[in-house]
Length: 136
Length: 112
Image 1 (cartoon, rainbow over the protein chains, first blue to last red):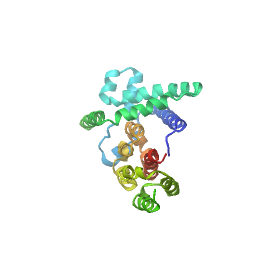
Image 2: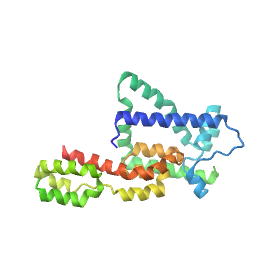
Image 3: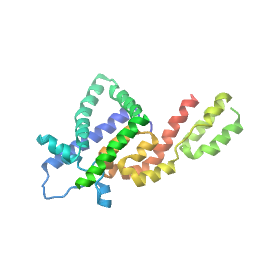
């Protein structure tokens, strides 16, 4: 499986579409129904590092930025990706460019640098500990 | 390169590649210059079995994708709780082939 431009765009489109469907479902669902889908949380009863992202995005949509930040800061990153990616893919497809693909490759190389990787991993672990403490 | 060296390489590293790629690698290795042998024998390939173990234990956080070098997909997996658990289950079956494909990508820099 070589990651080519079209494969990446198709994959990101599927990911974004399912993300939007999931958010739509979350915003319109019956609050009584429990819709926790995280496999890790179901198995171990401990929240995973990104548990609470959906609730965080829901709060962002409602305008409660502080509440969103409390629930899970990773929600902001997810919301940003969900917002930007479809537009970027559309522009690339219409103009027949591969700017997102090139940017993705550059980002991968940047994150793979040991200093950056360790810093990001630490941030995720801190967020995870916070998540467990909050009992998300 | 000498056929003996090439066969030795294939014997030692065959498990890191997909079966249908091995013949292509063998043909290409026979064609390339002998001076590349030293570099070639130092390339470290990722073991598909290791990535499968990592995928089963920590697939939900995308660690398996980080391990084989798919950093972008790893972040995607981490941010979505392993694709709501679906992606991590799919990856239990996909990760070995993905690892072999990554190894192929790695060796191709030396073959061409």
